[in-house]
Length: 322
Image 1 (tube, one colour):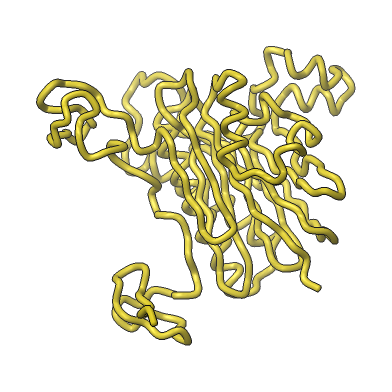
Image 2 (spheres, one colour):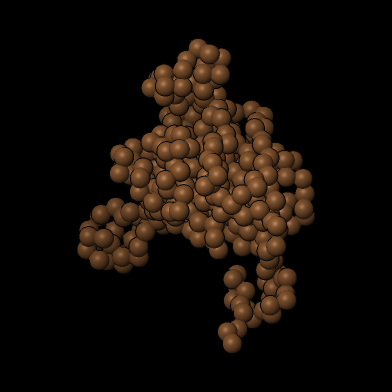
């Protein structure tokens, strides 16, 4: 029989243990790595094979810059899985994802898309995703109110992004704006899901019984559609289509998410994604054929359609408790 080990310090643990006696880790909670992937994608130079890679991911032997570990990120925790890809046109991947589960309680997942015009966008998205998922996992542990937990998660994300500027002020005359990102998250239990969002990253419900978009974009174009100034078709090609009306950032002021709670009665999948996917497959019926697939296939569709932006997809399967 295999010996159980703590995933943090690898000390032996028993099946009934809730905490590791060696390091104190809560054994009921699993989550994606704090801080996301760092450094080069591989240990040796892709050109000359040298293992001497400096702190800025350049080979000290031939000078070749190495692909970042963030260029392609894949995580899986049980049935929950996610993929984040740099795409074909962007210099770096400024999307981030974080998710985890609490045994017997549920799943928390977050996708953040760094605003390309902002400074340190990839740091903003990772800090926001990490801060939010920790709040949501704690809410699952405590069986706290899900909608309030979503508000608290966004507040934690805002604080984490603001700290980037506090800890490393922007240079005078720096290009762009303060570190910023969008946000979408799901808090899933056996009977319900609570979705929260700020910006234009989206959540969808995909099911054989019917699929639908669960979020509305916080963009000027979406606002004009709501006011009847533009049709949805006109909005997709309008130059303001991706101009955010709300975001998470050091310059965003007080932000509260839009929040919705659903109680599906049939099995399905909750999809969280950045606009790198929904730019190509915006409608639920466009995504429905991919329902049996993993996140790799959703990302592949966006790459084959052009891959003009970073692409992140997280899938959370759901089956209502009987």
